Image 1 (tube, one colour):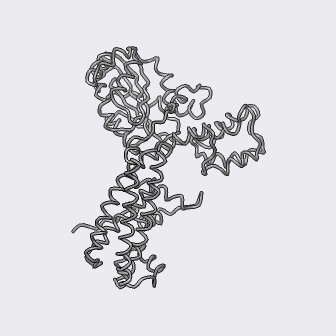
Image 2 (image 1 turned 30 degrees about the horizontal axis):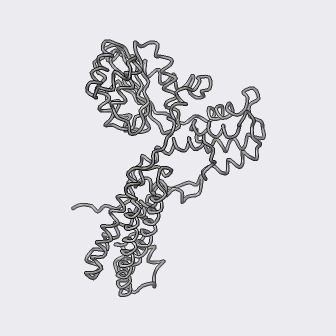
Length: 468
């Protein structure tokens, strides 16, 4: 879906350029280009909606429609590029973009200027006809309504496992990260010793934010008068967050259902008044949501209360921590040593360690996991099923499959779903730029400047003229 969005995004500026007076298109052709541009803009808007929905939740008709639109975009872009190259053939070299220079070299001799104008007219008519056919099919099969209401997918909250993991199974948490986070939470200074303090834990999916915070929460909750641990997630609403906190504080759901947000805030403030509380808001995505949630917590609390948030988004973590005594804790991947310990402990007994025949493939496997606990645990579970370690040739086969869909194992599907959430939160133009990285060989060194120029050449990044 995102490839279709990217293709359309690079075509639209070229259609606009085609309407410039310098190209001397006939009136009928211009009208065709304008009509095509309007239809393509509508399709681009629909594709951006489609791109927000995970692929496994899309109806098959939507996928077919998006594929047709993508192919149309590629065909149209080829025609427009050929026309622009040959009409601009006599222009000064300094006015050409790098991409047009390359296209000139590839396509020299294919068109004369007169032939180019004639063929662009024919091509516009043909593409307009195809676009109309695609639009008609979309209408006949009610694609729009399917996109707007994707089929619901029932999934288990991925945070549950992290919330109930035994401390004895944790690696890289006990004795390291938990002490750092506890220090941030419990440190005192003369200016803000008794004020409400907020600590936000930030890092991408799979790093173990929930596991870390739950471990620290269990260790220090006894020092507080009341406490609550509330998972939030995407598309949450403030009313449910307030209800979940109050339920954790001992209220019954039946008492709360009839209350609106304002009443819930008042009730929560009443329950927390004159108390030292510890509350965790886990996995928050939205600054606007936080703006409402924070209304229930008074900064004037003078009992040393603590509020912990976790998020994947750096800007959200900073937004949560606006007072000078608040803190942002940046999660990092596990170290090489902790990665090995976690991996080996999940596969081999601690007494025996890693047999020599598995050491080399283990090193490469862990490199693929990149210190992400979720990935390490998932891969380890595939290599040691039913308490039996699989032979080394199956390890090699799994290593070679990583990055190409892995396997249909449910644990892998869960991992990919958790990690892909961050991808689907990207705006469409950044998804296209990210997908472009698949053009490079695995583990190859990518020049930043070269990559940016390639994005520009593909029109993924648009050039903005300086204003006088």
